[in-house]
Image (cartoon, rainbow, N blue to C red):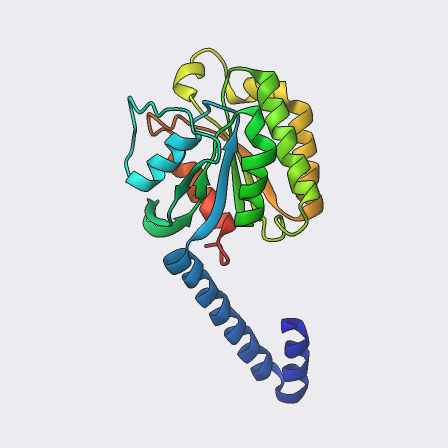
Length: 232
């Protein structure tokens, strides 16, 4: 539509008309971004197998703290826990976030809680969490998420990013590297990248230790910037 208006205004008013359309479009995008980021909240979801740090990450964002050392929440019950929209300091900016619900990571919850959350939220981004343990379970969980994205046409309509957040770096970084750890997931990462290219979202991998506050702020700044309507 913008392209059509540019053509009409350019034909009638020349360069001035085209610049007017561009300015109006830019202002509309800025207003759209403001409403999401400052008022309603950016919709995203946090998924991953059990005990990977999903609840801790949401709490890290909600409390605006640099670390949650010693934080050891109980496993999330079936159905998950509602999470109201809240403000979080991401880098130098105060951002409204809308994760909607904190869900558990047990296999039985994937086809119920995960799927319902995806359909309910229609997220602009997904944070998939994994760690250095139980590779086969993480593989299965990641493949389930990719299948879910593939099959849920309406739910994935707004999807802009899938971040693979490799948590607990304070436990594994001294003995291995992120690249070596991710070699276990070579096929899954390749599939994810192919899907991202085909469906038009971005994906990347970052390491972090949520409890220690290491790497989380950087990961979230990148994630939020990609899923917001007007990236900075």
